[in-house]
Image (cartoon, rainbow, N blue to C red; front, side, top):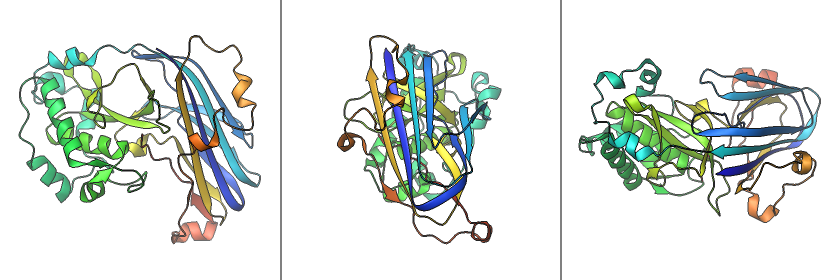
Length: 328
């Protein structure tokens, strides 16, 4: 499937801010399951961009803005061809045996451990104790853990944030795809399976946000993508951007700025199938607005709370920018 992804992030401030250091993770990689045929990033105010790979081999676009501004606009456009191999057979032919040698691969061991947002807690312990130990094939185990995740959480927006740990989501019993992914990761790791967090997009009419799902280590068959929010194995409608231990390793945007202004964030995402690679890449990037109505694309416009800053932040007047919660 050939997909075009357009992702716009707008940060607005009540007064001038400056000295921004900003990271964006919006560029899709080319890998076994997808091929990135083009990626363009536009920043307003304009700034030079340095591209590097983080510790999880995710593409990061880094830029600094020193002069004062009241609005920061980041627009990323990419064209990706997805060609994902069927995941069910790759899981079905592997027995569920986390202690087997094929599950001890070096590249998977880190993802068997707790992480900052997929933390050990009484809530997680109680959740794991209520799940019968999986048996049969790895596909059976993955389906059982995904079903348990979907039975434990109710999908509801605006009850959690980008930095909500899984213990809080469990206490609430509600959350978005980010929380479903974290809980599924905790379930897999609790039974000895390596699993990692995936940030990306999904082609599904009516959805207007970035998406989160997981990858499970299938031994001899490598990583297999699983969507615990929808309860199925991932197909060609999904575009991967970044992966890590949990959301904190893969945020679409992360940065700091100098100033005391209040900040609001709006996010626009559009994923659409196309018949060919566009010949005019600049068509959207030169416009002042996203190519769909404002009523259909505004995901959030929340104000940053007037929380007490740390002593260092107060003295230097640096503040952290808001992150995008993944919630489709």
